[in-house]
Amino acid sequence: MPFVRSSGPEQTRGASEGACHLYVLPCAYEDLLKLGFSRQPLERMQALHPRYFEFFDLDRALLVETETVRDARRLELDLRHRLHDYNAPAPLTVRVQAAGLTEWYRGAYEPLAQEAAALSAQGHTVHTPLRPWVEAQLRSRTHALYGWASQVLESVEGEPAHLDEMPTMHALRRQVLDVLDAHVALGIEVDEHLPDALTRWYAPRSR
Image 1 (spheres, rainbow, N blue to C red):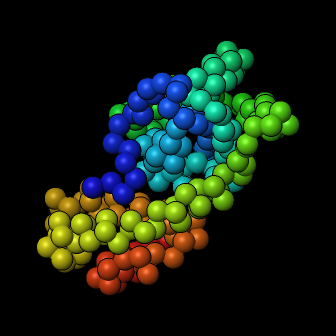
Image 2: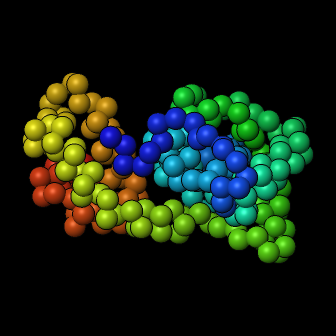
């Protein structure tokens, strides 16, 4: 029961379906980044890595808004051609099922940051650093946290301790920690948005 839906690669349907974003996502601990485009950048980040808020450097990451998917695709394709010499293998920890194994580059952050600055000067909305944008996205969804947490408790018969005790619950336990840790990492208090039982379970496990 993912809190943010990201179970598979995003399907790009058509340029007439609204705004899109070009994203540049640098890794936090090495000179490697992911370039791409998405109508739902937060879901895309979570699909690439469950702990996206640690894996990617949100203080250097950026988004460029475009009016259509076609605009974002064209912009990404142009950048890919220019960054050919920077191509690099994807990190081993990226989810294969998220189709995240292509468009990784090493040493390309500065030219991409310069390109984003140029696009901003041309009138594009550019979100950089990305941390405030991600925080705002998560805050806008906190109203759904209680319902999601209630489903978690229902799946463990109201006993959150089962997340620790039952081997079959390992994946769900990991997902719960990833979702709640993301909020805490972005400075969002989760206690008021969770059932008391889950709040008590999470408190000693929060980072």
